[in-house]
Length: 184
Image (cartoon, rainbow, N blue to C red; front, side, top):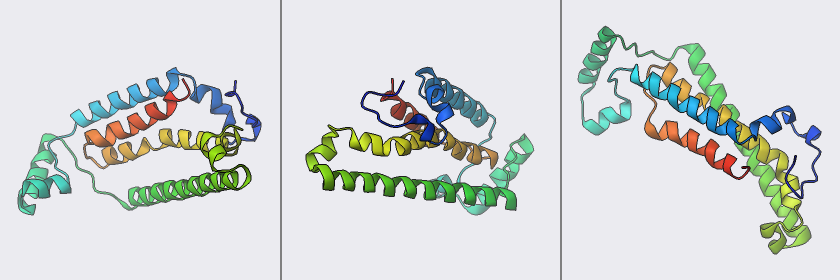
């Protein structure tokens, strides 16, 4: 069932076959719980390898870090270097996210501007005629789905042998949870 005031044919929305499952109240919470547990487990398998930022913050010399990383290798914490495939994947992944964000932003802006021109600023902000909701429905839904795709960011970090930071992990978990709350 679509929200009240929606005059959008769901069949015309990309990935519409996932609509009801993705907006089921349990879906985001189950995915976030599994994601968080997996990340915490994988983080616990990493050694004490420090990031470049943490190295600078602690004022450690590069030779000290190299020795620390060598020690981690002995302990069993392989810090992987980004090979050409991983680098290519990361570049394409980030490029796709940037293009998608630009596409959504330009369409949001166009829909809002059109509503202001046709119905006035008050209608645009209040959306009393559901014009913006209907014009942005497809983009809002795809933006919501993109938050699940963005979990890949964390697994890229883990695949490189690094730990995912608290902010990295809970930013993605929080985005999914927060966006889904409007649908519960």
